[in-house]
Image 1 (cartoon, rainbow, N blue to C red):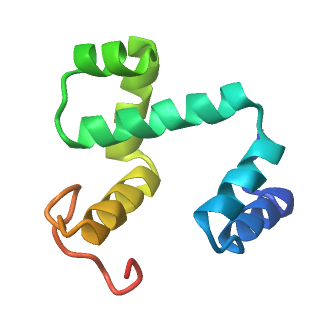
Image 2: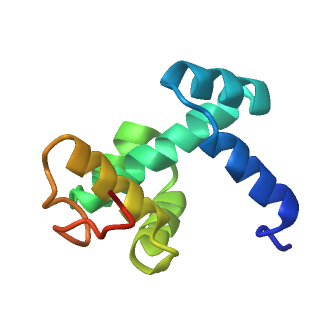
Length: 111
């Protein structure tokens, strides 16, 4: 299954067009079920914990994700398209912690 299509690109552009946290919450709640939002949130939490070198066992316990899902997230974090890494670095930079993630320095595209 191809995921990078004009339809998915349209979805991503719609997300980029949202201006506030409230708008984003409303859009995702209309788009996804509550369970899907919670699942995505747990995966994001796991990615952040993996970046902070938290052991799998603690991540599984804290998030309720399976060890297989945590392992898959770990692979994506290390060998994926750097989506997790980019978001983690940006979040850290916003919080004044640019040393978190793969790179301690944001590229000009990330700022």
